[in-house]
Amino acid sequence: MTVWIIESYRRRIREVRFLLMLTALVIASSICSADEILIGCWFGPSISKQNLQDLAKANFNFTVLDPGEGDSNLSTKEAIERAAVARIQDGLRICQRVGIKALVNDERFKTSYFGEPAYWKGIDDMLSDYSAYPALLGYSITDEPNAIQFEWIGQVKEYLLKKNSKHIAFVNIFPNTALKWLLGTSSYGDKLC
View 1 (spheres, rainbow, N blue to C red):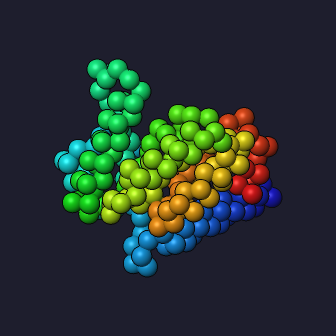
View 2 (cartoon, helix red, strand yellow; view 1 turned 135 degrees about the vertical axis):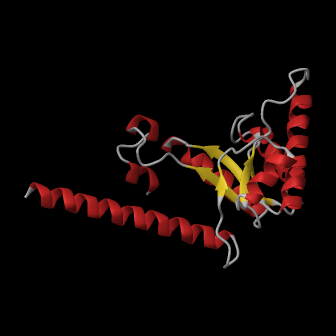
View 3 (cartoon, rainbow, N blue to C red; view 1 turned 180 degrees about the vertical axis):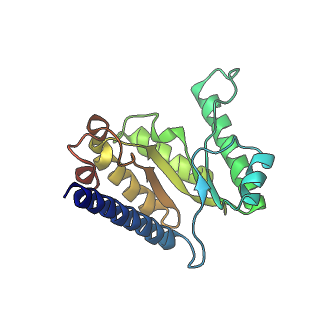
């Protein structure tokens, strides 16, 4: 009896894994051409021509561009923000040359209070800064949010897609092994539904 229960459990795990992979393929097929599946890395190497060329040679077709720490000699928030934007724009130009796409991780999603006019202006500025780059795949809104943040994420996604529907709004969610207190719900299924 115990062996049957264990095997039944293992079979169910395999079914869930298959459904998750199938879901990922369906999502990927909706944002890229029929003959392309997105293969990338999360916060890959720093933005440099050599690192992005290495990703392309390894058959990755997208990455996440994060501006990194930047220059500690800059003295104002505006100067730091301009330098971060310039690093991401450089990365988008390199991505185009080496033939990969990029999700942009921009701090302006996190630097002012959601719902205030300054927040939406920051997103508008971000769209203006990046949307014309051919290598742009989309925008990374946040990483591993708590369920409490989902209303905010939904509003940001709708705003982004209304302003620029040709690029995706991406959110990296917790894995199914995350603790309940991180999820903000009683189960992983509750978080996703």
